[in-house]
Length: 299
Image (cartoon, rainbow, N blue to C red):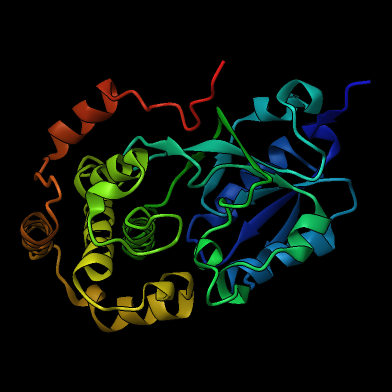
């Protein structure tokens, strides 16, 4: 008999840290999911997810990031394990739509876990130093099942800091090959390379979008052009200190020039296809761009 998992029967947990739009987004979630729970302010991605597992009272639990707005149709989702040929101990991940640049992939997407899986995993700050796949990501476990469907929108631009941090983190992570540095960016998975280009070039049409682009370029630069320890990207205290001591001092007038300067460096040193897209061009791109399927499966 087929095993059906119904999203509406699982705990749904709002996972926030310091997002300036977290309270607004949590209120939106409670209006749609009155039984939603919350974990807030836990340092470390691994520890935060284990805190969610501790709150779980159902077979699975869904995590909703603090910058997310959930599509209510997500509650109607049912997973037929037999139909997709996976076991019940898998993690299930849906796409998230990034408001700043129009991308749809795992970043900001909804995820459904078992407490057993989360309590056993060792990722981010809890990872083994020689396990590059777990240093800054969750998604490289063989039991991580990815759907192409999109059920949330990620708003990472409620403040300049939030936008810079989101861009910086993806500028780092999209530069890696399964968590490891590369000597030639053209060798990483083609979808991640395209996502890196979009993070670095698109977003000028939305509030704080330039900060997101600058952060992405800065993250890509540090990862690929210096000997900086890229695992710092998982440390939110480090990111806050960098912002407060360095990047927050860049004025709005200087920001476009800083973006262009980093772009020239990335183009010359890494061969990245960098262009300076204005607000009109950015809006046009998001209108006509079609995201490739997150997972291309054989039929």
